[in-house]
Amino acid sequence: MIPYLAELPSEIYSGILAQVPRDEQQQTVLSLTRAIPRSPVPLCHLFECIRLRSAHSVVQLYRRLRGHAEEVSWVKDFSLETWTVDAEVVINLLSLLPRLSNITLFVGPSFAPEHMEAILEKPREYLRYLSLRFRPYVQRATYYQFLKGAYFDTTLKTLSQWPAYNLPALSVVQDPLDPAIARGQHFAQPLVFFRLDPITALACSPYLTSLTSLRLRIPSRPVALFISNSPRSVPALRTLDLSTCNIRLADVEALIARFRLLKHLVLDECGIMRGESQDSEWATVGRTCALATVKAAKEREKKLKMWLEENAARSYLNQDAVPEGVAALPTPRRVRRGRRGLATATVSLRDSPPRETAPVVHTGVVVPKVRVVPSSPTLCSFSTTTHREKHDAIRAEFERGWDEGLTQLTTIRSRLYQSWKNGVRMVRIAGDSGMEEGFEGLENVDDESAFYGRGSGTDNTWTPPVLCLAGANPGAQHLEGCAHAVVRCIWQDGI
Image (tube, rainbow, N blue to C red; front, side):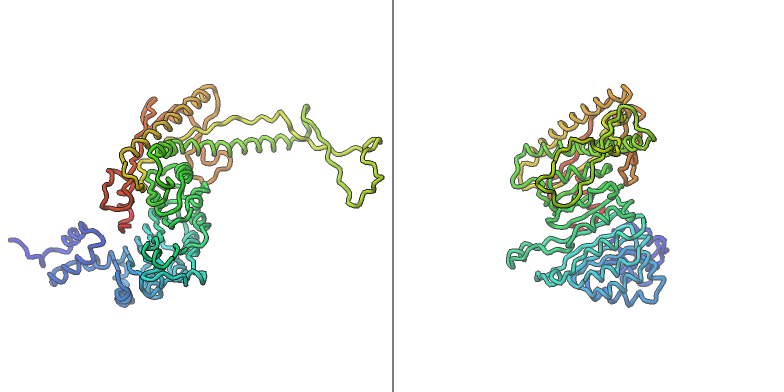
């Protein structure tokens, strides 16, 4: 006998609802409870993933959850998707939900920096996904918030003070100003963040040590420098989206050089190539991506050499006696203040009094020679926007530049391999200590694998990154495995 739907056990309904997308679960549960009112549909799924799209629904949910601890414990995913809402009610509502794993907030003109500080005041240990989307202008652009100094720099500062919890994904997005508003009212892009230094503080904070996916979109601002200028910046980063920011080709090189685990890079509407660039210039982009690890190795080797020289000189000068062959220069006399007469001789024929001498090392300091071997390229996909239609020609030039860069990398590694066989000490960047003092973050090269490619033996071949030029439009023709597809799976919000 076929049982009625109302007679199915609640476990069956839970299994069915587990197959429904999270953003559709709430409406699906409501539909089931209305269509089959006597069915044992688990109501926990009604609160598990909450999407609020109106100010009234925020008030309703607050009234429903206040005083109901069991229903509060069911809420795991919270998304506020409206620009006009009472910020005080949002603060009170989120204070009821301390165990959220996913938070998405639309920060509109009703929010002040103080409201965001109150929301983020208490660290959330269970949070695994945080998305903050700023749009301090809706139908009519205004400078009111900005003229009174209402910038959200403190939002980033507050997050940077959280402990080292496990947060895989973080998104901070400022929506670009609608071109129609900008043209019609001669209104420039407002500033949500006045200074960019808090980005560095956040990127280097303990809270982001486990971050693997970062989306940071601040229109027309040069943010790359502020996330790549420190060795402690986001050490586990694998996916980076800096769309709409002001990014130059030199920034691309710095980003790939800094984040040694980076696999997917998205730079839509960043203007990497100024103006209508020629196809051949994309060979430079490909070459830069392939050789970024060489840049990282050279910079690290330079710091290591300076440290070794300072260490050797310090040990040399700390000896009790001045070694034979080390020149001793006189300590200059102190010049007395006062007016010197015209008849005062500038040259004296008398013997000068003895002066104290200080040892100055010219030669003899032995500095051990240590070389840093460039790492293998890790970039798998690179997505950006171009207004040129010759995408196939651009990709061909990009791959040509990539191959040329790999040839240079292979030559450098072969030369270092010969030095290694001759007894020169070799190290490579491997650690995540967040420091570049001495040998911190480096490990010794003990076998030949460090000088070869991803394959075995002497295989030095790397597959070129997937270069997608379709932009952020999901309806455009994207390449399989492009970075756009990767970020859409991480941030399922369609922007």
